Image 1 (tube, rainbow, N blue to C red):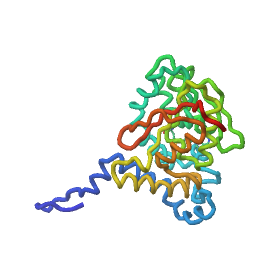
Image 2 (image 1 turned 90 degrees about the horizontal axis):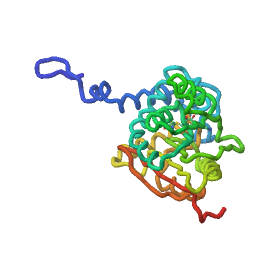
Image 3 (image 1 turned 135 degrees about the vertical axis):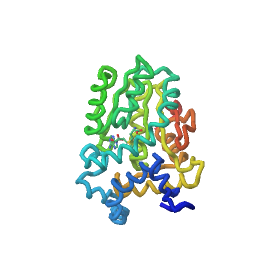
Image 4 (image 1 turned 90 degrees about the vertical axis):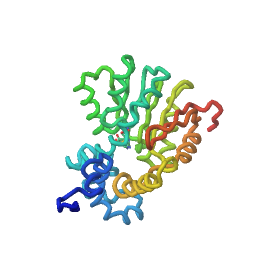
Length: 281
Ligand SMILES: C[S@@+](CC[C@H](N)C(=O)[O-])C[C@H]1O[C@@H](n2cnc3c(N)ncnc32)[C@H](O)[C@@H]1O
């Protein structure tokens, strides 16, 4: 606080942003509640390649395994942060997803089911299958049921870090929003190759990420790069926010062709991929 010419207290610029900016709020709460204590273990995490800070909350291999069991305030700050950086682009993304009139969409890493529910509202015929870890899937399917959409949203448990993860065929569109950044490059290749094996030549695979090399402002690039500290110390020990060029390389190495490369909203990049006809393994 400062005082004005009449000696009355007034809010400083920092105070204004702390009170009125949602971006500031979600980032500060995420840093304080999710990351702060765990970052004391950053050096150990860098050395071991495991999220050593996560032991501040529980004994899981990754934060995603423990998400539904985190303390309530930590869970709230995690989901608020996650949703803040997804929700704002869903409306524009829906227009792109439904250009091809998909009847079945697989939402990989569908989390609480927010996008699946928006798909149901956007198109009366589409069926969404959410693929996620058991804790998140249960939450998503409960949300679908509570909103009367249980006939249109189904689910499949999958752990992409298991030995041989599989997904069924039958998707017209495979959707991955803010999902690949939860994995190392090697793991991403495994995920994308598994998806390619379940795709036909019409299937679209859509990737949405906030890419470090696609930011308009240096501060945004810096903040995204710093998010890697969360991935190292808390999330999984081995992932990060990627450059668009890295994601394109990985998609191509997995047997995909990037058909469209679209900027969405302030920070996001959307890739529409198809199976590469000429790809030889
Ligand atoms: C950052 S959230 C993104 C959620 C949502 N798609 C969005 O755009 O907001 C990543 C999602 O990937 C899931 N996930 C992480 N690791 C996973 C794994 N090993 N197997 C399956 N799903 C996983 C998480 O449970 C979570 O729902």
